[in-house]
Length: 276
Image 1 (cartoon, helix red, strand yellow):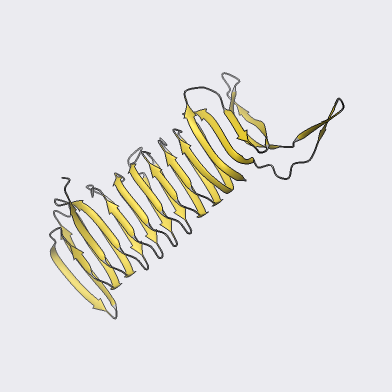
Image 2 (cartoon, helix red, strand yellow; image 1 turned 60 degrees about the vertical axis):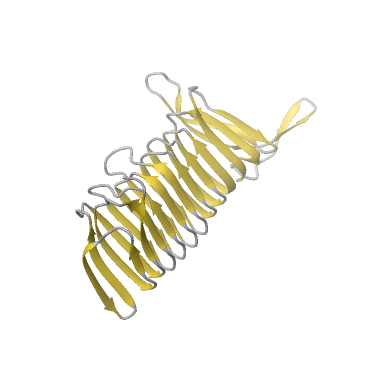
């Protein structure tokens, strides 16, 4: 419900929970392993506080089943798959297998996730670094930052979406990327891989891509108020105008990837990086 939430992967085959200045803790075992008989599916909730009167414990009904407190820290095995729902919480997750996060208000930070990420916050930003797998990141009013991420297997897609924030993608090795912002900039720095499908779209913002000079892609761009500029040489350039919308197609290198760029009001810039 509230608090700073930290979930850490560890080499222990157990779950540990610490809550500072908040709710009690309740474990609910929902499934056990058929071979070992040990718990393998848990839900973690708040519990009703207890007060002692004489020798009797009197339970008061909980206001909510949610955990809450100034600080919540949870240790789980590194192979764990985590699902967490937050109200007004800043959530960070490190070194787990999968992470599914839904947050009404607050930032989400994920690192070293091994197979899959789904992260949504309505009022806050999302930051992901050094993670792998199919990755879906969404924010209504915050920035999305992804650094040093890539697929766990061929075909994994990176999808990012924000309404009024910017998107920053650096050293991303997914072959399929979809990045969309309604009123923010999209900044991409990395390689365009052979066979890749890259789509970057904003209604009211700048698109800036920094790619190696020897990049290879078929480029299509659409823009309204603004201009298109590329430091990387283009060939077979074809430009058209329909009303205030300008479109172009071109080939960069051998055209081994597909690059689609769209902005209604903003510049499109393709810059050279020093990397090969």
